[in-house]
Length: 210
Image (cartoon, rainbow, N blue to C red; front, side, top):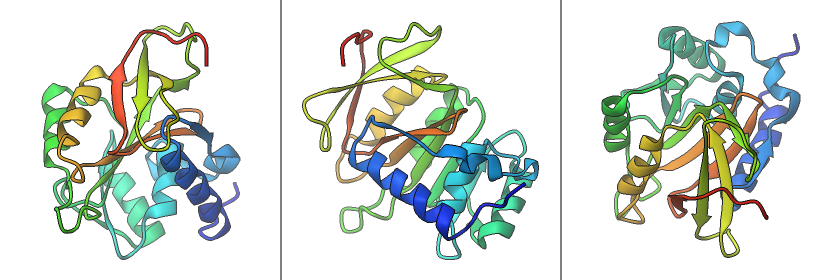
C-alpha cells in the first residue's frame, strides 16, 4: 500500500478543503488518496486523510470513535500533533454515532473562539454515510437549504447519516457570530462538504432542480 504523502497529498487535499470552505455545500471528492490510509489508523479513511492534512505539532485534536486510543496513537505518530480534551481541541474528528446528550455536550463544549480571537475555535469533522445529490431518493436522506457567503442565493444539499440533532445544535452554537465552529461532513466514499459558521443551514424539502 502506498503511504500518504505528507507534502504532495496533503497539499492537494488542503486545496480541495479550501475550495469546499469557500463554496459551502459543494461536494468535493478527495480521490484515491483515502486508499493510502492503513487499517491501524482506526478511523474512517476520509477523516484520517483530513487529519493527516491538517495536524502538526502546533495544534491539538480529539477523536470520538469506536477505537479512540488506537486512532490517537496513529495520529500522534503520523503528525506529531497532541490529543486534547474536547473543550480544548483545535480539531475534532467524530467517527461514531453520538446520542443526544453526547452531541449536545460536544457542540456546547467545543471551542468557539473569542471576540478578539474568533479564529481560536474548533473545526469539527463528522463522518456521515453519504453526501447525496439533491433530489436523490435515498432512504434516510436529510435535505438541506444553505445560505450565506460563498453561496449565490440558496444551495441545496442532501446528506444520509446525519442525525437531525446536529443541525439544531450547530445553529445554536453559531448564533453569536463571529463566535462558533466550522463543520466538515466526510462521507464513506471520501467526499467532503463544508458548513462554515457563516453558513445558515435549514432542513428543507427535496430539491429536484439544481
